[in-house]
Image (cartoon, rainbow, N blue to C red; front, side, top):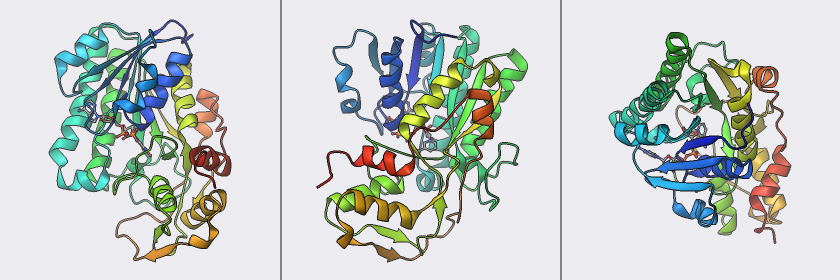
Length: 315
Ligand SMILES: NC(=O)c1ccc[n+]([C@@H]2O[C@H](COP(=O)([O-])OP(=O)(O)OC[C@H]3O[C@@H](n4cnc5c(N)ncnc54)[C@H](O)[C@@H]3O)[C@@H](O)[C@H]2O)c1
């Protein structure tokens, strides 16, 4: 399938990943609609599209069936990024997490089914692997809900799969690992790299929980966007759930050291805080399936990706 000229809907369009996806789709020549309730995203992430005739923004809630139906009527492909994204907040607000992540996804699928949308790609998460210490994470492992957020992503994936099985719909779930890059806001709930960046820019030593030997598969947002474009066009992706990472693990300590070096501030060093309860020690994606089915190849190794993220801040 060619993307040029397709009509697409991006939910969560004003967020970190959604806004980069909008950029890429507009660049591909897609007529792009962006939906967001602005609960966590910001219009400034999309302000460069104000004059773009290919892009329109709609403020609305994924929980609202009528809004989703109205937009699905106009598109060929849906990229579903909107979500309740915080694991710790999901523990305190499980109903809100469920209604956005599970009912919201069901709204997307029902609208897609009723209106014959050709393709639905949704953002899932490596959180579905829970506390299982096995690495690398392979898609055939049994999901484990270690938080309401993880439970909601497992449920969303299950709904997606059921729509493929029952209705033959072309659906794909992408399990993102630790995504970083421009427009990722630093908040107590956001990714470690955005928090380290903000610490370094304020001239403060980044804070590492535990000994810093814990490792993650950090992937630049541009590679996640590319995976979405591939998933939308690869026929073998129908009905599949696919890990999206780099296949390379980096320790948190290494990440901080690389960032301090890039910013020319090695003297800041880092501070150690007590280990956080419930954090998994290691997380790493097997990306064999992404390679085989999507032809996916990560293009930004960590050091290059971090240079891009920190561009403009380097002294
Ligand atoms: N960032 C990561 O490392 C990561 C890792 C795994 C999975 N994901 C998934 O990727 C997707 C995008 O995450 P992100 O990091 O860009 O987060 P984000 O918070 O920047 O983007 C999510 C967007 O969804 C919007 N939104 C929330 N509730 C909504 C609702 N009810 N109706 C309409 N819009 C709503 C928010 O305003 C926000 O703009 C999410 O599904 C998330 O679970 C992200």
